[in-house]
Length: 322
Image (cartoon, rainbow, N blue to C red):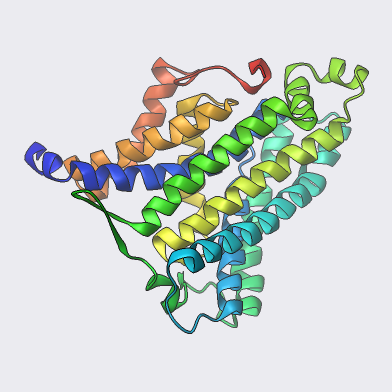
């Protein structure tokens, strides 16, 4: 058992980091909304799902006639990330406007908002399964996994870094997630809108008195979280090569686990939690078998809630400082 772990250590580490990077980007949506509204947006997993279909539709529209590599591949991945990010970001803003803002203006309880989030999640799943996927991709209702175009999968190649071999899609995922995390961290800590987000998270009433537009801040928070989920969706499509209307369910729960593991409401904690969870999953699957991968992930959630409910870093968005 442990001999196999030693043999598979480096491949498992790369797999864990690439998977954890996707978790981290999706976890940002959970952690930002929680930091500002104290709401667990369970419909965020469907925002990720929408991003995967936006990226897939873009690939189909481009119609690759041959595999691409080098700068062309980087440009293609950037295009998919931009399109998926914009679509997911717009979807997140629409979700907030329809499902949460009316409740917030009426002073509804957090429980009501949580129920609304679960209802919105189920609605989006069924909307895509029964209406949008059959219409968008001309497929039967509730079609299974939709693969990405053949020539895009053929762009996956092996890169040699000294004596170490790594697939380029995994490298893109890891680097892309780190770049997006750094950009978001700088945005929240150094821009006027970022200061508004932190002020709202710390004390909404005082923020209003200081001239902060709460609706604008909340919309921006959902937009940013949606953009991050869209970028994660594009990277996921490249990494795993398929999507379906149910793709966000399990991944969303694991991303929420990553947010709790790193410290819910903590931007840097989302990155730490995502990468840590990805590594734990991969190491666990090597030691116990791939069938135990999900069990390991959710065992981590239970243990964190029992012994370290504030997460690894613990600091929340409202306590962040520029």
